[in-house]
Image 1 (cartoon, rainbow, N blue to C red):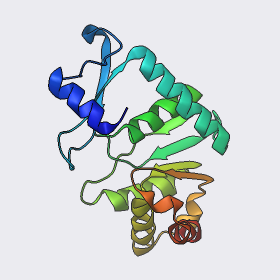
Image 2 (tube, helix red, strand yellow):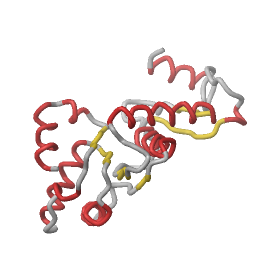
Image 3 (cartoon, one colour):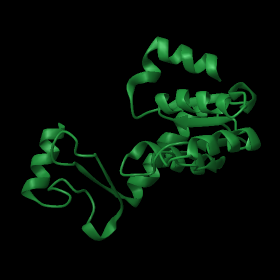
Image 4 (cartoon, rainbow, N blue to C red):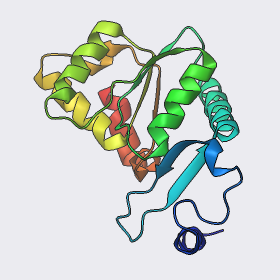
Length: 174
């Protein structure tokens, strides 16, 4: 199934399309794409889907070394994008401490640096570009990002973390 297939389905059967696997009344979360390349694609998530998302993210986090006694700082916009929500659900499923800080509001990057320095979470989730911006902002605020004590950093929303040069910059900054 392609994104085009999903869009066409949602045009034929408005709201969720004709591929919805649960009754409309059982839709638990609604997520989707931004629509920057055309009609937004809607994702209707049922409760069992949400449990599967939580379990999958918890397994990924476990594989990265996150444990129930860890704290994960989630520095991502909580919008239609599933990445931040999936991370939050996975951290909660793992029974680790979730710190859903958010991102994107003017002045909040300096606040994020302050909170990271204060709380010393072991895990950090964001976009790669925000991590680099955060490190610069922290240094401008007189804070050393390496003193935050982050052990696991993971990213989504853009391809930077898979680019060796960007990954090296993040590693050096934190």
